[in-house]
Image 1 (spheres, rainbow, N blue to C red):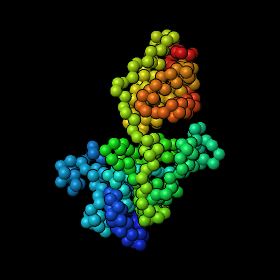
Image 2 (image 1 turned 60 degrees about the horizontal axis):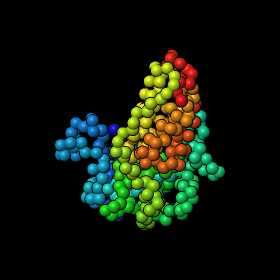
Image 3 (image 1 turned 180 degrees about the vertical axis):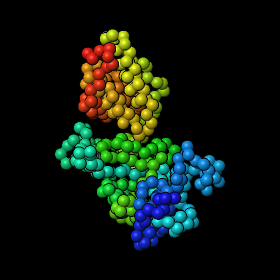
Image 4 (image 1 turned 90 degrees about the vertical axis):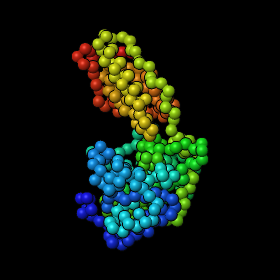
Length: 341
């Protein structure tokens, strides 16, 4: 356990961890230890593929026991864990029936400048995830839902905690990355958040009001985040026309591979898959091998089939084509001229 020898919180912060973890458990929120000063789960220290059953929990279960199953509301287990080591506190959002909206800050790029929003979010005053979320609410004609349990993260972002939809017909929401917008992620089933008073990289997480409840997730957000039904059948192969047979076969393989990657994407990653496919094919457009119209014609139905909205589809493909144009890709030696319509 080399991480135990790393930097630890100050004694006064360590003393606050046990009562904080117990308070979360009293709310019905399932907590688990994080490595001191780090966002990663403290246990297990290995992946499923490297499980040797030497970890006590894995040995008793006779199988790999991931962090999700170690999250608990048991006061005895909580006191035993956090009294020994100044672990950070992770909250498993799925079993806690929480949906946490993560409003992040822009990162610094290779040139030292802060990353800027993509075209669909480029408006005056938009510099971070909180601004994007405000704009999303405005575009949806909804008030910004700020009256809920709120945490300032160590990096300067914000976590908005909401109670997940309940009831027999409620959708099972999963974590998403960028689905709501630039620098706006969500943590639900399959995810977790770092909770106060955890300190990561010498920067603390702080609750705005420790006693505030987690408000119900607004219905319009639940609808936007609800997983779309998977297509019942895979895509039909795309056939191109024009050009020599060898070039056409190469392009058909590229196009069909891009479409297949969209259909294979899981919940929370489909928008990213559409973007990646548009980037890949956009390189061929920039190199003169494909037309931009062809890319729209093949990617638009694929994106719609996996549940992307029309607006989301148009802007994601356009954004991917722009990025692909930065690195043109030509065909192998068969031809560098436009080979397919």
